[in-house]
Image 1 (tube, rainbow, N blue to C red):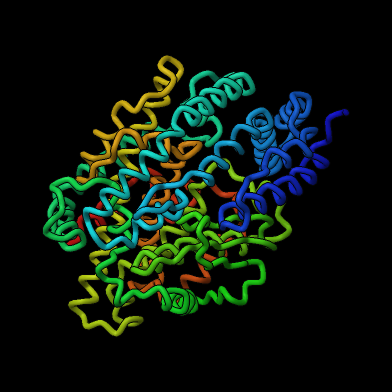
Image 2: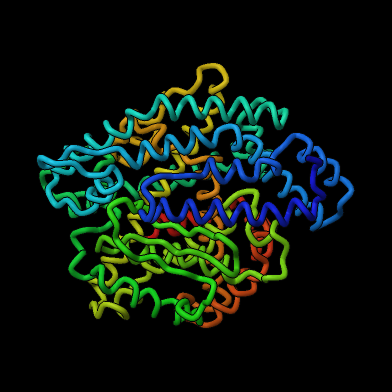
Length: 500
């Protein structure tokens, strides 16, 4: 079969993306017990050939401006598809092994995902420790296959792109240098440590109790992030109504957005981590959460609402490359980080939960601590991943530095055995960190242009809608320039991390 033209490839790629997204959604929300991505990839095998890749590569230099970037993103999608076609069956097998994995607990068994979710709600410190260790043991049993898949993907990507260095290869795809990002966030972490350390001790004491270890394990992070002792205030039942009301304050009526479908149900095999799956933006965007009670439910809903409103708010006339495809996720994460940071506003707590000024301020500080510890974790994670991939061609992937880096940054011990289970594809950690910097810059901009209570002003919604219309076309760095910041200027971020 001959290769398709650029236009034909784009149309067929769109349908392929819809089918794969809907399959991923069904598995993620627990509607299906097995993943069948390999069958979808096989049906579209004609899309992902070296001949098709050559056609797209040849078209790229002849295009100009936005069209060139559109073709480049189609080419990147084809590159990824060529690799995925070879690995889809093995990746399905790993996903299905994770779905089939069972964790022994209380004389019975829990699905691995249910056990991971249980860590957020188990009230006894020592039982969380025990459950976390068991969850880690079950997950780590799949590390050999994870490592083997990483090696296979690295080899295939090297052959397809002609770039042997995994870091350089990802930089070429994102069109951004990774080590300067790591340097910038490392500096921000160091500059904010003096403020973070007493905050960490205070909140770990309050959240984990007097029996806690000096350095608790990451088994407790879901409990910490949930802010479980505050559950009586931040109930599971109120999370959606409060978040919808919050969004309305900025002029967003999420319930009337015809393209956004919410899945808020609690199923045994539903992944505990909230997400958005942009199947066919702006027409079909799934917002998926699994509420457990606690402040994190509100943060997670607002975070995913940022993604959903971004994708559902794009101009439907945009080409596929600017509605659904992107070089990375740093742009859409800006809007998610912006919206979930509303939980760090004392007046939000007072307005929606009837708290007095002192309690509202205290609970906003809890949310800021949760964000700070996550930032520190990801800044250390990026450093580990750069080192991991830098030596990967020589050693095939080792946990060297994972536990040491993340534990030193957070004061919470991250066991070395989790290094592959914690590995997001494509240096997603760098995308998160770029968004952390950018969302702090955007908040500073909104405070100047809209007001300190930007989070309840329609002017914020108007500004964001203008950005959403552009879909995925701008880069995170272009957004920085528009609002008057250098992309790696962490001043606004450090100011927030060190605020009293």
